Image (cartoon, rainbow, N blue to C red; front, side):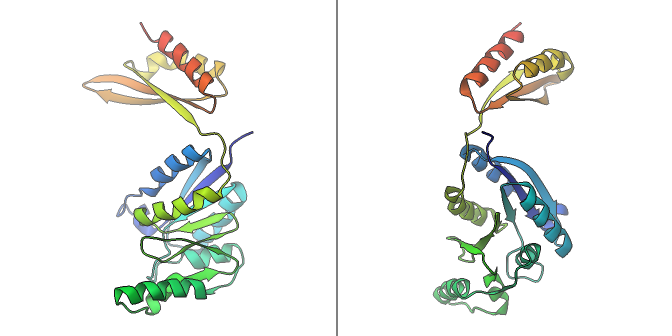
Length: 240
């Protein structure tokens, strides 16, 4: 059976402007691969209410699981929560269990739980909280969408609490062979190999080093014996 599918929605003007480099996509892809969940799409949208709502609707309908990152903090431009709620036609408000978590956290640190910080306790009706052991402010899950912080350390901690609850499949195995020839020279034999192993993913990733061209050929699949066989053929083809 095919593995479950997933998509990621990255939210924030700072990503699209280049002000912030997103690290969460790479981390999520790595962890989902280990869990046997296929990350098939990553979409980036600005801090625009309609863009967030439309993307959440589309991705939720198209994939088994959706992960979002960004836009659940205390400032005016943190608008993810209300627009995820809007995507599912759910009311949203300050929820007592989320408020209590924040109250205890800020009491310990001697800070005020002011109106801005209370924004992080807004949870759509019917959602479940995602634990945040780093800074306490929770994410939430609603239907098949998991809404998480954009700060990488917090995103990673939230993901760690979500992954055990998801149904995975077969982990994807991969092997890589570096070939010191240009892609134009290897394309024909590589295409024939890919046709013979249509159940595997065979990708060519070119590089230039010291004035010479080459490519890393990556073979991926769930059946280790098939990956081994394809890699052995690849090595034999380009051994000369």
